[in-house]
Image 1: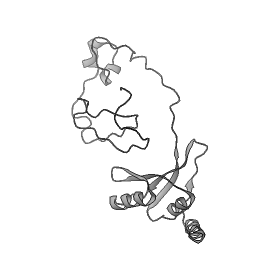
Image 2: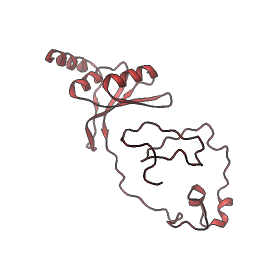
Image 3: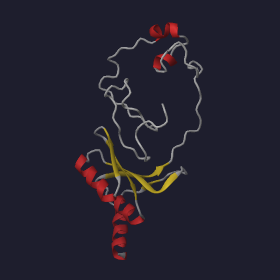
Image 4: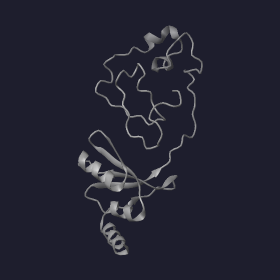
Length: 179
């Protein structure tokens, strides 16, 4: 076993890959985000994720990554896979520092005006339609990726346009916080 670890360490040392420094950010010990090269196909991504015991994720055709908990030997092996691995970084913890309320969007909903974009772009319900004329074609063929605590894809405004992506936080992907 010791010989295998030494060989893995030597292979990683010969690679040009290193662990991206976390610069003092709060990290999850032993967890990593492994970003693969753009030319890696879905089969290789899936096999790599299975091999390291991780969860694969992709956005479009370009971004492919794996989230995995790795011990030192497995991390060294990953760092030696520079033919498919582009970058390896610690899984970092992101925290919201503060939330500020926009002065134009009051905390009280009046006259049944929607909480949506129209509501927050006008000062009164009387001029809401004129203030924000929306062309239904806006956003055609546009993908939007949201990092959130969850979403209710069954909501009428999403009308089959919503799908769940990767959940690296655990728990349900559905909206459990009522927003």
